[in-house]
Image (cartoon, rainbow, N blue to C red; front, top):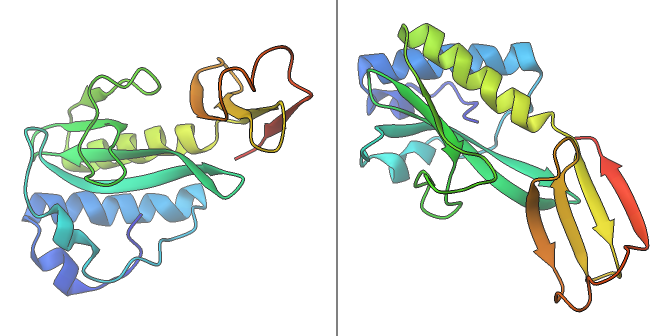
Length: 169
């Protein structure tokens, strides 16, 4: 999530996008998120709008110092679409079964609050780590079993895991 107050970063945004970011930043404090240490020009790579608008917020869902999933909010001036993102290109993944995208409308402020609440809900979901060995693991949402990350071969992960640990995020 953006944390700096650099007017330069917001200058490249439309008035509506800037308002979205300001409201979203206010929600950061309400939710107790740790601000990003991204440089002031972190928006530079998101200048090109997609069919969903511009990605104005993104966050990595992490466990064990590993990114499980990158999620974010796209805003096009009319609606906001939230969902999982390609962690390199920040493209919205419409076909990701782990976190299907959701679109909502309302005022710019309402959309920013709903996007922040959606992101917060995901960030607070506990993750279950199943271990077969140091290299054979699975990570899934603990509440519904949705698989997030797999390491090790299928053979290495056969049979019952030796340990299952719920990680509070």
